[in-house]
Amino acid sequence: MGRNVNYAKRTMIIGGGAAAQMLLKEIRNAQQSPYEGDKYAAQFEPVCIIDNDPKKQDTLIMGVRVVGTTSDIPNMAKRHRIEQIILAIPSLQEDARKLIIDLCNETKLPLKIVPFIGTLILGENTSLLGQVRDIKTEELLGRDPVKFNNKNIKAFIHDKICMVTGGGGSIGSELVRQISKYHPKQVIIVDIYENNAYDIQQELVMEYGDELNLVTLIASVRDYYRMNQIFDRYKPDVVFHAAAHKHVPLMEASPMEAIKNNVIGTFNVATLAQFHNVKKFVMISTDKAVNPTNAMGASKRCCEMIVQYLAQQHEGCTEFVATRFGNVLGSNGSVIPVFKKQIEQGRPVTVTHPDIIRYFMTIPEAVSLVMEAAAMAHGGEIFVLDMGKPVKIVTLAENLIRMYGKEPYVDVPIKFTGLRPGEKLKEELLMQEEGLKKTANKLIYIGKQIEINCDTFIHDLIELRDAAKENDEATAIAALHKIVPTFTTPEKFNHEALIGV
Image (cartoon, rainbow, N blue to C red; front, side, top):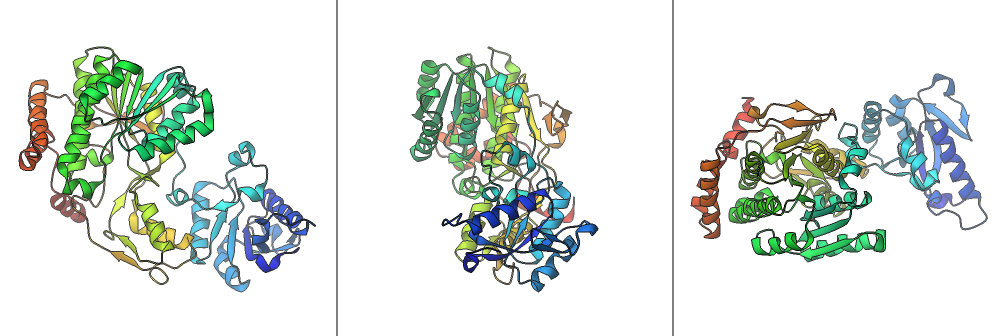
């Protein structure tokens, strides 16, 4: 079909509708052009089409024959010596999409995908061929992307001075990106790591130029006096507190750093927000704060308690809120970038345990949750996202290997390395005693606020702070157990998880 076939891969197209016809037309036009043509088009040699419509079977669509239905994908891929597959049904529902992706995975061939209809209509790229892309990992998670109320977020952010601590990190930088879309009065990035802060600063300068009032500051949330100086000078209306140490095994080896950065850092920024009459303070939490089995998770639960403690005081005008979600795809330290690097370097993919499961969401979803929760918050809430079914990490690894056109355990070994220090087999999103309360968004819930004994909490917090400052690990960990009574050992938790207690 046209020229440049020497460079083309034999391609199966799934779907014989309008999207497939547009795709075939673009490939034909590009390949028959007298010019050098679209080099991307030269990668495709359409060989056959798969479609479930009985009337289309054994017919030609723009010269390409329909050879079977979706159940025939594995056999037809072998028969026609297919080298790659394009899924060209943009309007496909999530369950049907996942079923077809599973059938394509059986072929061990690379799979590309035509984006959703909304992307085709609203996207700037009017070429359908230009929008064919590799399948995204999040499309294997088995649920639709969460939708959020942008009107609420727009009203909340517009013309506000917004400060993001940890603004250079995975979550913090996406917060800054999304905030910038809603015409804030000013955006203040605060981060201790200058490389990340510089990267997001330059990205926003290129995107918005002088239209965005952007300030980028290098500072540590541990430094009370430096943070006070920033609050006093810039007077933020909203503070998103994303600065934290979050890596479980590293924090098990250095628990004092988790306490100093997470607990003391949160206490510093939250109390300063209250003192400087910030309208809303939003803390980024984690599902690892629920029944924690490690110092990082326990420190984040302590941060949630600080937020709830300050909300209970009803002093000043600040509304305090925490947002809790699971693992974030593609974030710094997450499994996906590690798996990709291992596959691309020809190394075994390492998974800690065959039974380990996690809840996952995309970075934009996580940040949209934070933004909408902040918009609807009245103070003291812990917002929790219904993230659907948890995903087995080994299944995620297997699917990712297949996306590279390879066979798990044959072309790419999967090596089980054992649970890391402080690691759970499964994470939970809610503590039992919190209960659930619905919100206007059916996938966002509010955990019931736990009353905190103000006298003992502050006393215990001071004991924890003093021990951390002295790097007295034994006293600090004991104090953390005292503050967070659900803080348990991973051995006890994992044993109960395995026997189904």
